[in-house]
Structure formats: structure tokens, C-alpha cells
Length: 429
Image 1 (cartoon, rainbow, N blue to C red):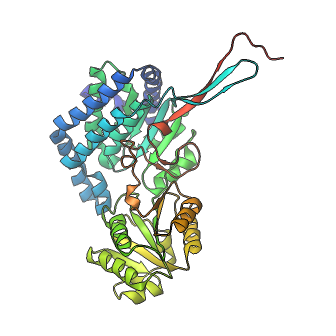
Image 2: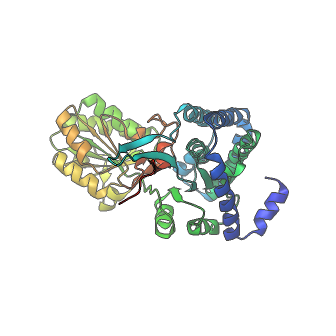
Image 3: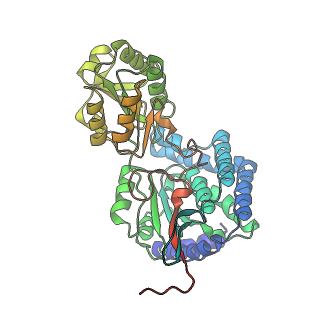
């Protein structure tokens, strides 16, 4: 952004700024909808190449954000989400290339019917239009959102968190420059370049330009967006994820999967927060799980039975079953079988991601069918709750609602549909 553009932004009220971006994004969405596969895919690959070329500049901008975050006393989990390094930049670049290699999600015939009167009706996938994306901490969302929106031929208005503003602006500059080089509308990916919180309220009111709002962040942000948005919301509440260790779990799988689900990265939404232990499970397996977690310096709180198995386990409170720690801490509870586990998850969970560990396929099928979450796994870590791991290249978030998009939101979930009705002069009697 030039100094002149910066001065212009500062002179605009948040409402006027958002409306101006909305108008530009709406116009861009109509142009981007006509872009060819080659135009889109080549642009995505060139953004990936530019990320690699400019990696040090991105890291330098990110260092400003990380330093400010430490000075503000942000938690280690939030700082981990915020931090960019060569490995994470390479991951973003590879995600862009994966998205580029995905089939075009548009123009697909989702359903068709030939009517007795000769009408031919097709339900065809089309872009949604203009998306609004409000997110905290994670600057990589800037790239993920841009990739998925461009691939699905949607325009997007991005509003990253103030703590990641330098990083997000550096990434957006690369996107903007690449789109310009490909003679594509740069307003297809807009970014609100101010940390002014009033811009969030302006976006939530901007229903005349923004078709769908997608939040990604903490509970307070998401609840505000779901309460105040004047347009539909792809809801993504917290990741209060569970693992149920069934009585017929394999001992090695039980230890390795629970350890990975909690400790691989504790600050992501797919990290397990509560482990449920079947009362019929061999105590040696439970003790092995506790020992592995404690060895990795994970704090454990549990009910009285779990405390009796290891003196390092602290007492759990009712609030622990409601808590997303996003830290090396986990709550563990003994339950009276699979029905009790399912009931606990459906009562306390956030409908995000939950897993059962068992060698009993009938029990697994029951769990998969009855747990009311966007992602349900069998004998696998909850940390697979990621669009990249689903082959989507990237994700805009994990939707925990039930309308339209659920689970990882990738290119197909960013499409809607319309009906094409083909006739040859029919009139309705």
C-alpha cells in the first residue's frame, strides 16, 4: 500500500472504508466468475512462487507482530498461531499449489431431471459472490482464504486480527501484486488495512455487498459475529474436541493417538481437550496414556477414578468439561460405556471433531453415526481436522453449524447453486 493509499484509508470512516471495499469486491466478483481455469491456477501457482521468493520479507514483517504480541503478554498458544517461519511459509505455498491442482468446483451438474413436458432441469454449482472473512492471530488464513476464494471464483474481504496486521498486509501485498500481473481484478481479494475494531461492526452490517460472513477465532469473536451479522454466517465455534477410548481399544493406538491429538500442536482447534475412558478398559492402558502425557509435560485434570491411577493428576471441576484449553492441559473422565461417552460429547462438545479408539467396528459405527459433530473419526487423531489433510489444499475454517457447510470449508463448500431450466417453448397450463 502506498503512502497516499494509507492516508486515504486513515481519512475514511470504517463504514465508508468497508462500503468502498464492498463495492469494489462486488464488481471484482463478477469479473472473477468469468476467469478461466488457466488464469486462476496460474495465478495461484505464482502466488506460491512469490511466497517462497519473498519469504524473508514475510518473516521480518511477522517478527514485528510476534514481538508486539510478547510485549502484550499473549499466551504461548496464540503466539504459536501467529508465528511464521520458512516451514510454515512453504506449507502455505504447497497449499496454494494443491488448490491449483483441484478440479474446478463450478459448473458441476449436481442434479438433473427431464420432465414429462420436455423441460430439462439442471442444478449447477456457482460462486456465492462476495465473502467476508474475520479472523484472529493466524496470518496464514490470509493465504488460505485467498486461495480457496479465487479457486471458487468468489471475491473476499479479509479482516485479520490487529495482532497479525503486519504479517497479513505483507501476504496481501503479494496476492495483490500477482493478481495485477495476471490482469485480474485486485479487489477479488481485499484486505481491511486498519486495526480499528469499528471495521468489524461495519463488515457485519454490510449485507448489501457481503453475501456470507466466515469467522475464525475465539468464542467471543464468533459469538459476536453470529449475533450481529446481517448476512448468513458459516459458524465455527471453539474446538472442544474429544477422544473416547473404548474398552476394545488397541493399547498402542490408544497411547499414540491420544498423545498426538493433545501434544502435536496444543494451540490448534483440532487439539483434543477431553479424553473419555471406558470403565471396562484395562487400567494398564489408561495408566500408559497418563504416563505418556505426563512425560511430555501435559497437565492432567481428572475425576476421582483417574486421579487414583496417578498421583500427578489434579482434580477436575465441572468447568473443565466445558473448556478448550489450547495449551498442554487435558481433562480425563471415566464413563460407563459408549452410550455415556456419546451423551457426554453431545452435551459438552462444540460439534467440531471427536474420535473413538476401538477395534470393535460395530462400536465405531455407532459412534460415527450418533456423535453430532462435523468431523468424527475412528482410530485416528483429532489433529487431522484440517482441510489440507482432507485433500482440500487448505480450508477457510471448520464449520460447526449444520446449514450448507459443515466440517472443513474448502472450495466446494464455497459454492452455491442455481437451476438451469431448458425448454423449447413450453407454457404452463
